[in-house]
Length: 348
Image 1 (cartoon, rainbow, N blue to C red):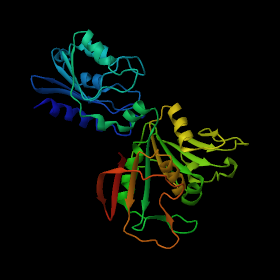
Image 2: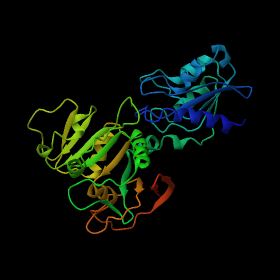
Image 3: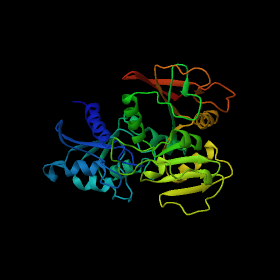
Image 4: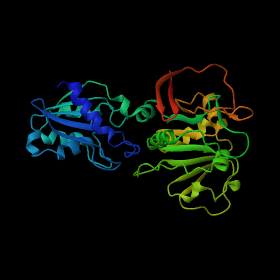
């Protein structure tokens, strides 16, 4: 086996924790000696032991680490957080070399972990290839704002809802399950007040019991007009209301109101960034999504295309403020889901 093969094993380990590490990255690790895998590990859940320590704990005997090579998908941390520094544990274990798939973009690490290991007699090598595991984490620490995904289902003629004030279900169970998987990887889910009123969504993740579910956010002109009987408020989990007016009555403990004269996409992302939230899913409505597109803040678009035609005055996707120039996206994935098709595109 080659280095890339061991790193792939580590990457597969990392993916086991999708949706469970919150603002921490997905990380996997493999301990190898004499071209044989001795132990594997990954960061199971936010606040729990890191991948390197988890792998070391799976060794049949601790002394087997001496002289071994550790393959890890992200640079080991060298600071005290919820867990002690992994670099100290690696040095103490007797591992002789650490091969890394990606240097950590977080400024608290950013090469310092590798320097610590080298200063303490552990050889290091960066071979790359694992950036894809944490796109939102990487984007956040390189750009200072959350990664934004727009998600919607639409008909063949580009409509997302029939005319009127009733929700239109377009996609089948396979696409709906896939949309749930998309929610698993988010830190916040955003909708507008009209979507809350018409669709009455829960915005929950129902396919996996997450350690920390995404924060559910509603943008509204007037918090006093919110219908507190909406299904959104019947489910546990943190809810933010971004309003131009403040609440005049007491609110449930899980509901927080943020007041601003105008909640632009830039203002919304600034708020999320201040809370270290790295991934935002904008689910609706059409006008809110158009605002993100017009502001050039839609990094990824996930479209579920249903073989239906709504026609007439049905609501088009991404209808709202126009663009002064065409935005170019790259189609990164096309997948059939039952009778529907999922398209995934990212800004070039």
